[in-house]
Image 1 (cartoon, rainbow, N blue to C red):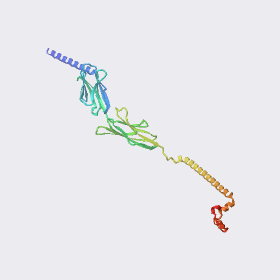
Image 2 (spheres, one colour):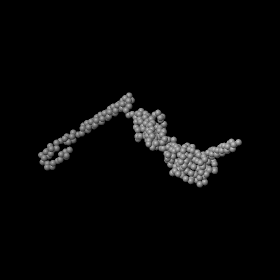
Image 3 (cartoon, rainbow, N blue to C red):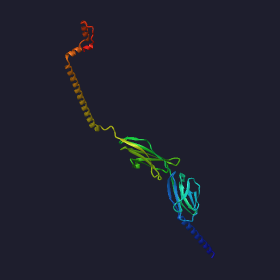
Image 4 (cartoon, one colour):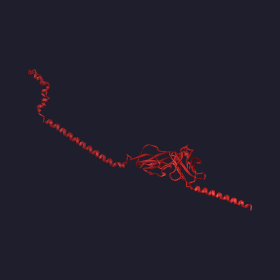
Length: 312
């Protein structure tokens, strides 16, 4: 008989515990936190939305890595915010609240929790990535067709380990065509280096791309490649052009020689014809001695001395 009250007490405790757990489970089921996982770049903004279908809640607590950062009253709004760049705002949809993490830093990475009155709690994951730089060494590469050319690229200051790949003329290269190496610096940032060796076939643009999952578009560094044909050709390829050039040169020289011969012949013939047609008296007078004419004039008693130009 003494065992009956004890059994009743145990049954009542079990019933109360079951009711409490049931209520907690229902409250937990009514709590929603989205997104469940978010990846952002350092310096960007992160947003999480928490809502509850239970209209009876009074206080909502936001935690970042198990540290209380924002306290919200359903009636009065945001009561406190203990971390800089962290606040909350009421959503336009229903009774939800949005946690705002502005200018996200690396140490924000971890768990984000929404807690309703200490009874229900939902947790999401926040991942913070670092965007570094990417650089192809060199300015402009000129190579002969068929020549082996090499390019080097570095992606510096990334977290987590970035993906690095090469593109030539807009076409992605297989990873088997280049090598990769990485190292972790003291600031927990990664540096990835890559060397590309390829045969120059045509002029194109060589691109090196680096990216992490939070980047919508990879960062790219480019260098132009100019491919030129060889000036020196094989001996067999030069025989025909050389023969044609020699023939044309000989023909031009022969033509020039003929023209010179004709011009010289015409000039000599014209000079001979002019000498034959000149009068003898005029020729003799022009060749007479001026001194002799002068002497004859003096003997004849003429005082006037005629200039030799007079006899001309």
